[in-house]
Length: 304
Image 1 (cartoon, rainbow, N blue to C red):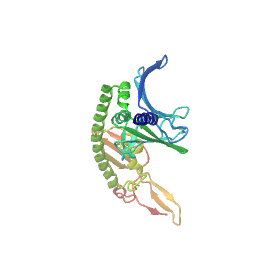
Image 2 (tube, helix red, strand yellow; image 1 turned 180 degrees about the vertical axis):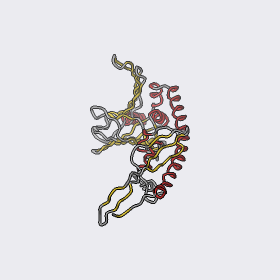
Image 3 (spheres, rainbow, N blue to C red; image 1 turned 60 degrees about the vertical axis):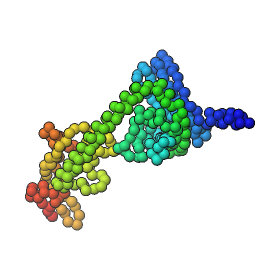
Image 4 (cartoon, rainbow, N blue to C red; image 1 turned 90 degrees about the vertical axis):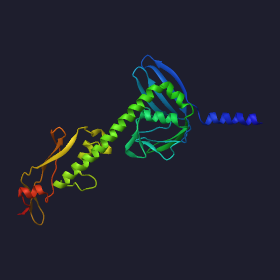
């Protein structure tokens, strides 16, 4: 009787959670391909046997990691991962790439607990697949979702076969080194941002005290790599200070109960780099009427 129960337990376990398998294949077009994969358990029929697949294309020295057969998705599919050893950490990725048949979701970079300046990349995901026991994934778009559970039993052997221990460790060391240097640069740029923002406030750049939407503040944040929505705009230049000069070009009219002639309070703003070079801002910037630049210019607001 005990043997029968043990048999059914093993059978049920193998049906519920598949272990990772790995193999090598290839063709004339793509060359050799190393593959490891696992079948999971989904919650959205008929997509309740999705696969998590890792490929290495030897010809191109490139990798991809994707979820297959988890649903039919349009643009805007989001993925959330939770590992069993980190139950309170949500790894989220938005607008993931999908295949032409809308059934395959490619995995690359994830934000940690929705913090846009805290993320993990492809090889860090692989390391977490090796060091945990199970993975829960939710894939969703505007039309539905699928909650999936993957066993990570055997993931270490599979990933080591595809990537190799030495390669993965080297990649992780490079990532750690880069993140360390990036954190040093980030702290330095935060201090520079505070300094440049102070100069802008001293000159009373128009709109600088707005919590959101200040063109001047967004410009500084983007150039210093501090604007989370456009991190790619980071210039990498070493800023030191700002030069702000008045460029008042006359007056313009505001028509109301009284016709008011207001000064055009445009200014030219330039970065000063650590090497002394100056780099002028693009765009349109003004100062408030009570800026010392306005007072020094003797320009006035007048009524007609």
